[in-house]
Length: 121
Length: 108
Image (cartoon, rainbow over all chains, first blue to last red; front, side):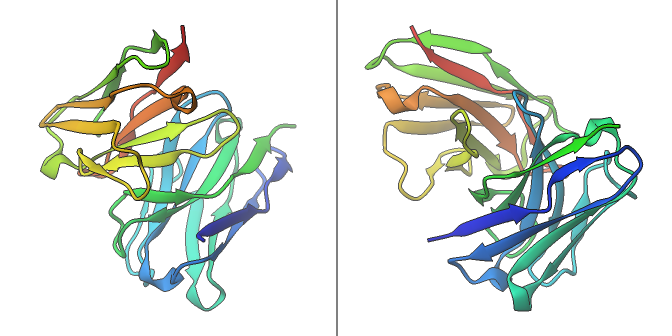
């Protein structure tokens, strides 16, 4: 059974940093690209960032480019999102998401339950 | 970026009825790279359809995806009680991949 478990969310002040982690199990992690997708509670979905199976291809939404860094550790079956210079607009539930492909295709077949990030003073 | 507009915003139907959800793209989506997701309250989205018309693993055949170019449709042939939820379309043929704003299917 595929499982994606996010951690690292919480309340953070504007301008500060936070690092999300995602522990993956139930599939061959290094065979697939991975993504972060966020959702403001009660609102729609916004893709944030994606990383290919071997980390050679990394893409970001314009809204987070230069502030967020996605990475993965295939030996630990883990995905990360380093978020710097956070603003109120980054407040959302952040989902760790598995791609259907090894490249950053953007087709998402499994989702975690999400980690809530709240940016507030 | 490609903007996806879903209609209607809310669909009020009874169990057993047919639901037709529309997703219109601001420009043509290459290779019909459109997916549909279902989201229930308090849950993560679930993939229903990819490639515009291919059902994901374990998805019942009452969920039917169709369309090409800029117009895509998700049809639920006969609504079951568990189908009342929010549905999102997504295009992944052009970077950045984008989502529609969602259609809520509620019990009438």
